[in-house]
Image (tube, rainbow, N blue to C red; front, side, top):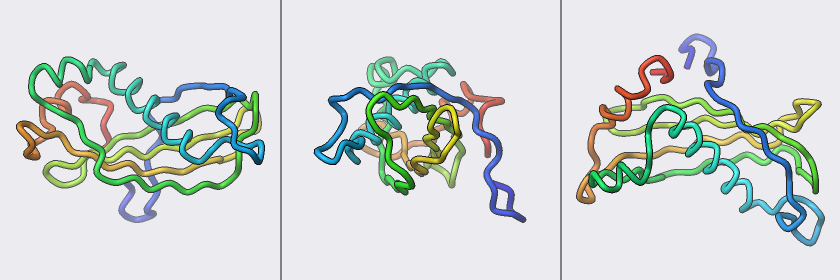
Length: 143
C-alpha cells in the first residue's frame, strides 16, 4: 500500500467467470454467499499459478486459514453476466497474508464487489511464519 495515498498497487492476477443461473437468489441477482465462492476460487487459482498447492501444503502439515473476511457489495451481478476477479496479496505483520480483491463486470469494468481477505498459515494448529509461501511468491507479493 502506498503510505502517502493509501492506494494499493496494481492487481497481480485476474480470472474471468460467467454467472450461472443457479447462483441467483429469488431477486434474480447473485446470492451474496456466492461471491465468497468466486473470491476463494480466484485466490486458490492465484496461489496455484505461483506454485502453491493446498493439497501439498496440507500433506506437509501446513494449513492456510481465513481469519477475516470484509466484503463491500457495490452492485449486483445477474444471470450470464461476465466478470473478472482481480487479486493482490501482501504480507501484514509476522503471520498474516492479506488478499485485496475486486470483482468487475465485463465489458464496462463496473466495480461489483471489493473484498479484503485476511489469513494465516498454521502448523499443528499454531500460527507460523508464511516465509515458505513468500519465497515461492518472490516478485509477486506486495510487501
